[in-house]
Length: 117
Image 1 (tube, rainbow, N blue to C red):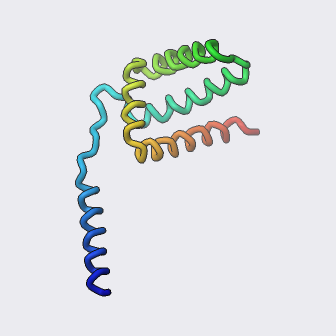
Image 2: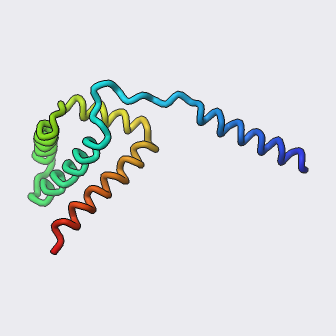
Image 3: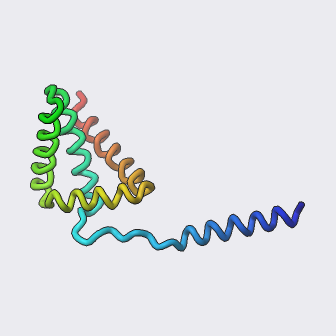
């Protein structure tokens, strides 16, 4: 019994080591830096919520989303392609995306606290 547990422990340790040694996907050149991307995503969520509040639907909602994206990218000095490239990177790296979205939620919470009386 002890031998099986030892082998199991060694096997799990080996798997953990191999997983840690995997090549991580490198962020694409020209992608939006994380700090800016967090702010941009937070602004996109606010803009999209405002669009839904104003009762945009269907094609109008999609057009407004694209317009919001163009404005936000322009305000931050990035192209829409850089935004999309960065977004695509994070969708391929879900653990990083989760970590990133914790920062987005934190940013939105800060903004909410600033406007509450």
